[in-house]
Image 1 (cartoon, rainbow over the protein chains, first blue to last red):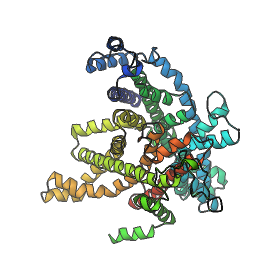
Image 2 (cartoon, each protein chain N blue to C red):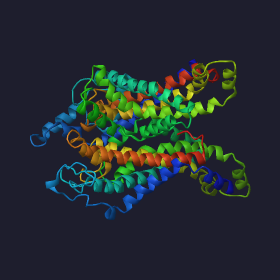
Image 3 (spheres, rainbow over the protein chains, first blue to last red):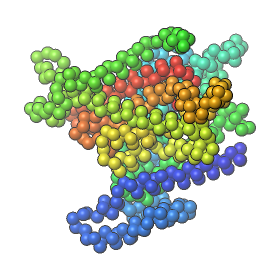
Length: 306
Length: 284
């Protein structure tokens, strides 16, 4: 276990270093932050030069990059051009909202997707199965930026059951979580259905049934336990997708998370803030995948030795 | 070959037929847009602004799916939009498949330092939300159909590189490759003539999945205001305009979205079917 963790930490450092370098390089191509910050009509060239010097943008790019890496090594992500305050607290303030949204979306997906998949497999080829399969198929095809506005239209504009946007209460969490959770929900339902169908024909299931276990116990203790690995893998893979989807969901529902922060930072050419936010997004993705890998050991004893 | 044909015939399911029918319908609609669309996509009629959808009857306005804020026909714009959305995603998928396959096959076949470097690049890009990469690139290049296709291809090539590489490594050890070496075939011919042809089915399956993703991604970029210029009737742009009228004219948002959903679902059905034929255990 310990060597695995050490190896993973080293990998994490490499990924963060590369991701932040990619962000650094790509952002430098997106334009000049100084022109975004100063109104072009009322600005003298001296002011432009001074601001550029103040932000350190007059140095050669490779020196800027060296400075950036030096600061990164000490955990200093610099100061936001737009807010003039250190990046780390700005980003950290947004992390809980994103985790809350992603967590709620995963909860919706797991709580609805797994039972749907099981029911669909147990009653294979019934009307219910056809219905669940079609719905989960559509769930994969529905883009978040369509589902979000349509849900707002139905549940917030037509009937005033839920608020259109904002954060703080559970009512405000429902629509964003459902919008973001639909895709993983549909994927889970499909995966669980095909997994359960495979497992139901195995010998140990017949044994469990023949020793008189009732069907519910067979499903939860034997069948689902075997597909736990693939369920966890799928949820882990979805963390990256959720982070991407969160960018759009947060924009639709005015959710104060890291996704909206990064979009705003990129369009304002706020290089340090955008870099910092990207580093944290990558960090969350990598840590989530690491937790998934660790959980394999608990779910399947055969994985523990490797 | 006969076995493949047999499997092919037996596996033709209702879902596959439905998928094929949907895809054919969309491609045909896109190809014959000038003949099929009731009006020109940019023909305005200010007197008929925001007409709700009406079907037949005395009140029929001629706008089957309603009209937008400038009195343009939503149905015609969706049909013309199919041209843009489908060609952007097809171009991008083609580019990503060519680039990813080439790099993945070379990397898996020759191994060595280049292989290690490529795999690290793939790892990094997997940890980087592709939408962010696309957003950043779209700020650099002017929005046009080829540019969007290139940006999407850049964010999508890793999918092929990873899977093609693994498969190449496995194929390299097979007897027919050893046999090709034995009769003196050079590396290039073994790679192009023996290994890559065996990967074509897998690549096709990946490409089908990706076309659907790219249809959505193009619209996502429009949603964020980074897609094609607003005058171009891509599905994403139609939805983006429609969202401002969500309250008063729901059809502007809902119908282009339905086009995206039905198109991606059709491609998805087709992709599932292809995967079942080629390799039921392929995990993406």
